[in-house]
Length: 164
Image 1 (tube, one colour):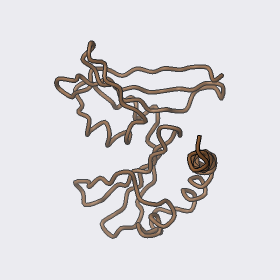
Image 2: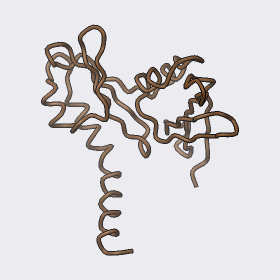
Image 3: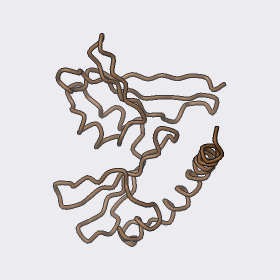
């Protein structure tokens, strides 16, 4: 491994360690009705995605996949002041994923997945999010299975593994 490659890997590992702590502090400082989109961008950086809503609001996605277990959606009013901050990788949102939804609807609900795997023989594309486990010794994942032909949700599943 070259010195530059090693240094890049070390810096990425450090960022992964400190990013959740930075997010926690930055998210706590975002106040609905007070914080502006410019302040959010200065604290959190550029969003992973930006969604325009039918009511004139806009929602920014701050996703920590594949290593993290959170995805925050920050919604701004037409005046670009924060209306709400939501952690969307929740049981309530997992329950909202229904057969027949398309990829865009699922992404809007849960954010970008941590990984996408296609199983040609099954005719499935499986989106995977790393999520909070029940126990600290678990690594948990939520999956959405899309039909490759139609692009629509076939089912959801979960995987829980003991951390080694």
